[in-house]
Amino acid sequence: MGLWFTEKQTENFGITAKVNRTHHTEQTDFQKLDMVETAEWGNMLLLDDMVMTTEKDEFVYHEMVAHVPLFTHPNPKKVLVVGGGDGGVIREILKHPSVEKAVLVDIDGKVMEYSKKYLPTIAGKLSDPRVEVRVADGFVHIAKSKKAYDVIMVDSTEPVGPAVNLFTKGFYAGIANALKDDGLFVAQTDNPWFKSDLIRQVFQDVAEIFPVTRLYTANIPTYPSGLWTFTLGSKIHDPLKVKEERFFDIETKYYTKDLHFASFVLPKFVKDLTDK
Ligand code: SAM
Image 1 (cartoon, rainbow, N blue to C red):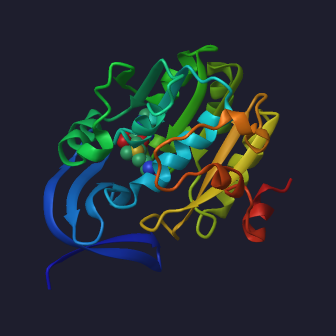
Image 2 (image 1 turned 90 degrees about the vertical axis):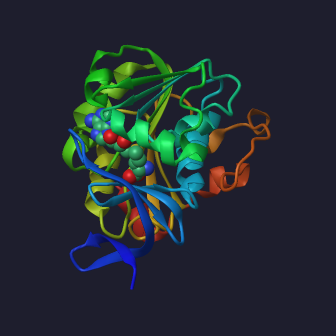
Image 3 (image 1 turned 30 degrees about the vertical axis):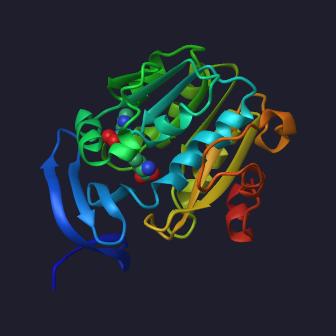
């Protein structure tokens, strides 16, 4: 029989994975943290019984959160990740030579600690000299930051528990203040099959704050429905108008220059979520 982990994505639907062993399990000050070895996806980080990242498909999410906004900005130097304690987005950010400083603000130090131990291919760059890791509430860090960042990425858990505030209009307004005059941000905004209301509300809120607001998608097999969305808000730079010469060769397994543009071509039922 063996051990199987099941994530209920809705009341009536979920995914299940065969578990070889449990490396670590604990209730932290903020959430339930499990690190397991699965037969299909390698080591897997779970928070509050939801898949956060797996060794086999993590590259999709981390490349799309990092490279779409970083290639959209003409010269990103100072970058912030809110959440992202597994270190995957940081790894991708450091592939951009223009980046001088990457700050990661995650509320739960245990995520970084156990990701370094059991997800070294994902968390291995957290100790890079260009990286500053802070254990703090991202909502508070953003509220205290003024014109500090070129690009901000919100790699948070879903809008439950410690991350509820990270999906509010007040937070997005705070992000606008924390960005420099030509700054931009991206946030993971869940899936269109089970969370269409969230996507519609976030897109509307961001569009009321940022002149350029766009939605893009990626296929992430271990995430609810497998189709994930990202909402991008920008003060000036448009991801659909990135010049040819801005792109340079970068080591990736999902992101490409063509996909950068194609990821904004949305199926009708998803595009409809962006209509006023
Ligand atoms: N890629 C995953 C996803 O899309 O579901 C998220 C991965 S990352 C591990 C999520 C991180 O957000 C967790 O480490 C969690 O501690 C952090 N987080 C949740 N609420 C936060 C907050 N208010 N401030 C900073 N980090 C927060």
